[in-house]
Image (cartoon, rainbow, N blue to C red; front, side, top):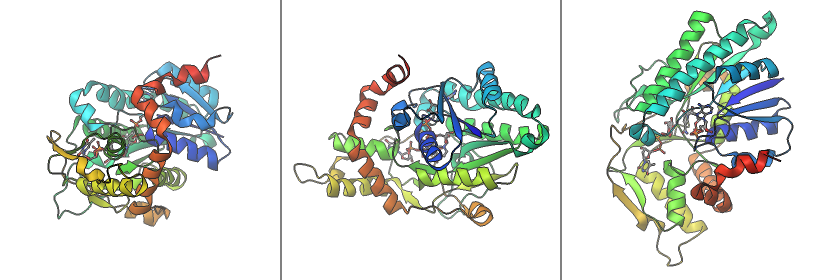
Length: 353
Ligand code: NAD
Ligand code: DAU
């Protein structure tokens, strides 16, 4: 048996690929375009593993995807590939439209062609799982109930609008063509292998480098935080037991304002690798101009996933954030290669000669 994962060299995708190969005997084909966010060093431990087949390519390349589907006959496609950073979507939305909307459309069409030609049992067992975000639901006021799966879509950034569009395409391919799809909408992930452009890894690496810790606006924007391995376990759970055509919200019941997250990171660093001058890293916090259109609050109601499929996160925020800070302290080379850009040479180093 084989699964096809897209975007498996990114943050969540790489964690998913590593966990999947550790827990199953299946072959995993990993299709990734290796944008700036794709990092094969994250998968270095898989070198020589015959069950990991890495393919450098674009989900929007219909001839490549069609050929991969025909060659490997996967029982499932799990779509992580996306442009994922809200700030980048504000500066340059084009790539977000291209990959998240057009790319998802092309992927769906390639998969539909493959799926329609399958014999009956393989056709009914096949799954297309689309990994999406809570940001499609927009922003909550302080007293609002958490997002449920029936909350209206009100995306506010080019990123979230492009993900909302992709969710709609996935839904339509189920209703119109019968493609057996599942969608997950997850809150903010954190953990190992997170590119240091996002809040938590950026704060860790800036703190250690003696740089300012830039907090947008008043720092009181609220996010729900989930340890990445718990997101991966939720995806596995939905893949195996989710009802076709359904969406499942994934979250950690862990709402926190950004400033509290930053202070927690500083406190852990103070404990684990104190500054030479004995002053807290919190002294490096610097309030900066707010993100345009910044969503104030996200919160996820994950009861459908918990009650239907019995999923529970394994980590609390306290255990997960400690593991995360410890991982960054233990992996300075991974961080240094990301910062220097050397991680982008990994493809030629790893896969030629
Ligand atoms: P990421 O930016 O770290 O990784 C994205 C990966 O996709 C990279 O390896 C990149 O090279 C690859 N990619 C980009 N365009 C591609 C294309 N056209 N074809 C093939 N590969 C392509 O993102 P992430 O944080 O790992 O997020 C993965 C998915 O999960 C995304 O769909 C994102 O919207 C969703 N998500 C992320 C979070 C989060 O907190 N990070 C939360 C909920 C949902
Ligand atoms: O909610 C799920 C989403 O979480 C995913 O769909 C996205 O792919 C992922 O990037 C993430 O989006 P956010 O915009 O919430 O994540 P980010 O880490 O960029 O920012 C988290 C919060 O911290 C947000 O309120 C903005 C703020 N922030 C971020 C950075 C990078 C700062 O205050 N300072 C910063 O330097």
